[in-house]
Amino acid sequence: MVSEVNLRTLLEATLFGAGRSLSVDELAESMQTTPGEIVTSLESLQHTMKRRPGGALQLTDVSGRWVMEVKPKLANHIPSSFRTEIPQRLLAAAALIAYHQPMAQSQLVDMIGQRAYEHVRDLAHLGLIDRRRDGLSRRLTTTRRFAEMFGCPYAESKKVRKWFREHASNMGMDGAELAASLGDGDDDIQDAPEVPVTEGWDESSAEIIVEDEEE
Image (cartoon, rainbow, N blue to C red):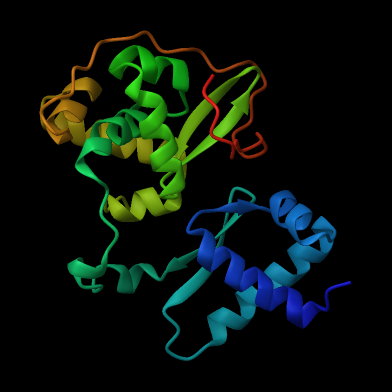
């Protein structure tokens, strides 16, 4: 059994390296311990990090998922040359997901074609979106890291969606027009009806898809 001290250290390293939020169950399974031990260690680590003088990072619980992030008051002071950039070819897909989330992957395919599969994989690998089970399909939602990179003051997906829609509305654009304006000029975006969320689907507990197979 991993000791509490070692478990805390391992959790800190894992969350820092992942670059995205992770659930308690994911962490417990990967570290072969119980969810209760994970929660206790995460809360202890969170308390320790808050007390670190001059610390740049914080540990945050977002709807049951934990993420290591730069403290908001410091994020805007990081030199732009050292910030992770989203490749321009992915910006249209990223904007569509933010605008429509929780978005069915099949709807994104209808809107931008087969390249949607590659773009979703790349965005997930960058830690910018989560792919979650919804029956036999999958739902796409943005992560806290996504919000930070776009300068959105919120992390919760519903608030990110509202923030994106308000910005698009202020510019006189709908989601497709906003996505096209951010893209590389080669994006042919088609209107597609939204795919209703399955009754009873819960974003906070839906299983995250980590494999790369296409639907």
